[in-house]
Image 1 (spheres, one colour):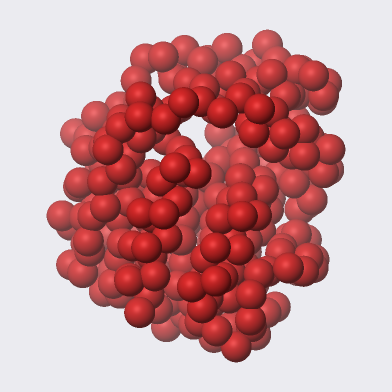
Image 2 (tube, rainbow, N blue to C red):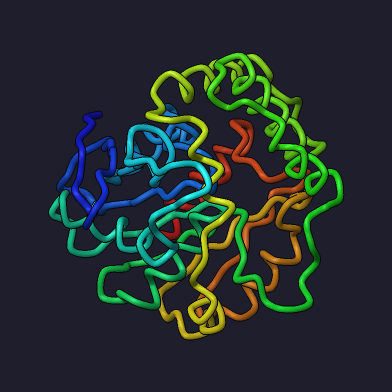
Length: 277
């Protein structure tokens, strides 16, 4: 694997790649408030072993990418979608498979609609087009994030505890919550972040509404992966995506929440390998 910084308009984006650059590219876009390390290194290496050139990166306001003053994001979702294209260009990738989780899945849909010539396929994990009448997040999640303002994210111990508690509230019933692994990732997340408190800016972002209304116009093959017990973007959102996308398949992760649990990696990677081929 190798890390490099990529210039995207007025931002620097921290990226990392795995595998052979001559192989088909798979760009991983993580969700809100989460840096690229939540695409775990072992997961990326296993994807690369399937004959893929895997690229992960920090979105703005997380990890080592450009950060903005908390409460004052100097960008929108349109800029984040453009960042993904800048990353592909920096690696000399003309067309790629794109896998997005949660907010990253929304960005992946936006890219497919705006730059369809750059996309070979989409893999949409725990995400939605947020159409009307789909169920809202569970109350326990809304309550958790409503109390987020009381957390001092610039304090290492507070940041780690918040990250563990956030991860715990999002898991499903199938898997035992791995607090030790989450603790390790949370420490790494804090220690490599330019400004940990800036991740709250992701809750303030606007844009993408017109794109989300055109999801059915996406013509590339799509693999939708969704946890049956997702408490923040309920499973009905994944079912809806798979129904409105013209070339979509749906993989249900029984008993899983808003997570990419290691116990699901086998099924997920097998499905991705079949999808990209």
